[in-house]
Structures are given as structure tokens and as C-alpha cells.
Length: 192
Ligand code: AP5
Ligand code: MG
Image (cartoon, rainbow, N blue to C red):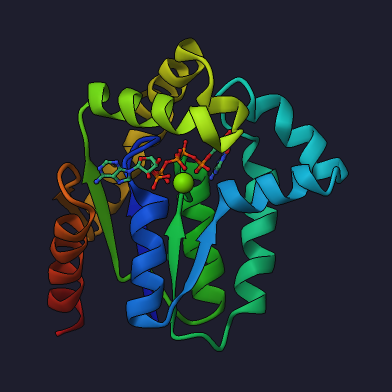
């Protein structure tokens, strides 16, 4: 399997690029944010619990997202591979992911980390907030908190994969198609 983690702060373009990569390489898109928002729209117990954290821009507890991922991987064990978007976000999640993948006799192929300045992230998210309806895009202080949570709790996940020799930075500003070309160049190198 080709299992790619698309890594980066809120608004760095993970969802945008994941949609294009899924199409090009025929992979399954796994976005924990999208899975959680779908739980919220169904008003499930899990969704109502997660909403309290998401609306403030804080991380949902590890056990909640790890359980969701376990189910999602079990459902897609015959796929060509996965694009993981917004997961793992803590070292505990990264360890759990390694165990789940090993259970399915597969592993992470590469981690591609989109690099975008804080100013650009804030601009993109506030702009999207005007139309997205996402509670966590509306307020400058919640957006700032999301970026802070990334720096304090998620950035270390990059070092986790760097130790495994799987971490690559990709410039994430500019035209969407240019960034896509940078990502696919890295993926072709990994596949070769
Ligand atoms: P999640 O849904 O993962 O959101 P996020 O990481 O905060 O980031 P976004 O989805 O907002 O940004 P993105 O990087 O996907 O960028 P996008 O392509 O949309 O998580 C939401 C919440 O769920 C978390 O805060 C947490 O509470 C919870 N959660 C999720 N996963 C979790 C986990 N594993 N553990 C614990 N909690 C978890 O682009 C952003 C905008 O920019 C768009 O409007 C887009 O059109 C635009 N854009 C994209 N590319 C460009 C470009 N090149 N130039 C200009 N604009 C661009
Ligand atoms: Mg996203």
C-alpha cells in the first residue's frame, strides 16, 4: 500500500491537496476532521463530545480519534493506500497508527509536511470562515489557538517520523497546482 500522511498546520492545504492526490493515485482519503464533522452533523454521542473540543480549536481526546481510525482502516484494507489528513496529531496517535498499520501488514510510506506562514494560515481560514460555516473558522482567537495547539502538541509528530527517515517538507504557498506538483514529485521519488 501507498500510505501518505499529509501533515501541516490548520489551513495549510491538507484537505485541498488530499482531494487531488486521492484522484491521481486512487487512494482512500482519511480526514479525522471530516469524520468528526460528520459525527457532529448526525448528532451522535461521539460527535457531541468532540464538538466541545473542536469549537474551541482544541484537540479531541486521542482514544476517540484512534478508535475512528481503527474502524476506517479495517473497512479499507483492500485499497491501494491511504491519504491521512489531520491524523496523527499527537505522538500517542502516531504510535497507535504504527500498531494498526502493522496489524494490516503495512506501514507509512512518507510524511509530506506543508510549510505555510502563520499570517497566510490566518488569512486563508478567516476567508473560508465567511462561507464554510465551520465554527472554528469564525473567530481570530480560535484560529490563533488552533495554530498554537499545532505548534505545542502536533509539530513533534514531525520529529517522530523524521527519526524514521520518512519526513519531507514541501513549500505550501503559491498556486494549488504548483504545490500539487511538488507533492507528486516527492511521491514519485518514494515509489521509485
Ligand atoms: P481538521 O478538520 O483537520 O482541520 P485543520 O487541521 O484545523 O485544518 P483545515 O482543515 O482547516 O485546513 P487544511 O490544512 O485541510 O487546509 P484546506 O485545504 O482546508 O481539524 C479540525 C478539528 O478537529 C481540530 O481542531 C480538532 O479539534 C479535531 N481533530 C481533527 N483531527 C484530529 C486528531 N487527529 N486528533 C485530535 N483532534 C482532531 O485549506 C484551507 C483554506 O485555504 C481553504 O479555504 C482553501 O480553499 C484555501 N487554500 C488551500 N490551498 C491554498 C493555496 N495554495 N493558496 C490559497 N488558498 C488556499
Ligand atoms: Mg482539512
